Picture (cartoon, rainbow, N blue to C red):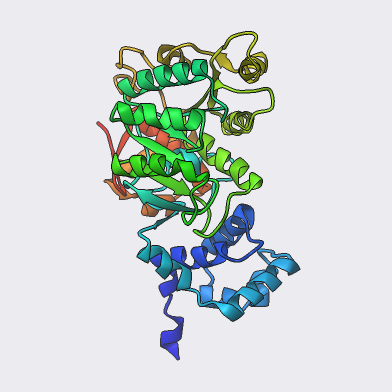
Length: 379
């Protein structure tokens, strides 16, 4: 009987397997999944107890009655590992928050998804300069030209281009990055069993063939829905240092991407357009609301405090004085020797988002360096 209680459920693969199963339950969205994940992280209960809906767990998370019923109904027809096995057969990776592939900027954003699905190249969790380039689906010749030029300039200073892989500005941005042989990341508003619209398939294939990555927070059979694209926008913004809107109508989905960026403390930039074009009204509105007007990559780099000659990209020539107690605590621990990221986090009394934000700040300031899961102090 004792063997049944060996805590194999704490392994990374088991956590991913159970989160994948939960994400397949109708009615369980990003916030409910996160609430379950963080409650378990704190209280260390067994997944087996959760799936039999043990009252002491369900009431403390807590879960609404309709969610409990949805889990019960799902369990009658499925085994926990079924969906995870399907993903492996389809070469779809599972990335959980806190794992070595999870984007660190996304982990620091408002309401990051605890689970991502990925195809293509393995993600660098802390790329040098991730920039989102977004805008209207009805891109004009002007919008195509400025999107191509600004994306090209960004790629030439080492940027990774993030966008939503829809037709219009998204596709132009991805294609411009591919032309520069730069890294590009596409975020979908549906699962990998779908290509929407079907005409986007060549873009998907080109991104994967070039060493890019495609991400989704949805199980493969999830179809395209309006709400999914809004949630997709939060990921595009969350994993980027800045959001650049190159062309947009007055009522544009790119406005939600900009709003998510602001909520996560990221820069929002907008490109001006012809004054009589309806697809310039959205960028004009953003500028009026406080977005930075930009006409080149240099303007974007300036907004981010980066020297346009490249000296400021990843520059660590000077180290600002440590002000925050958490920064001082992390450096004090690292002075005793290199640490694995998970082990370091377990020694601190802070949230995971605070931890990731502090690590990124210390790395950019030149205090520490990361090699996979290993973190060491820089002298």
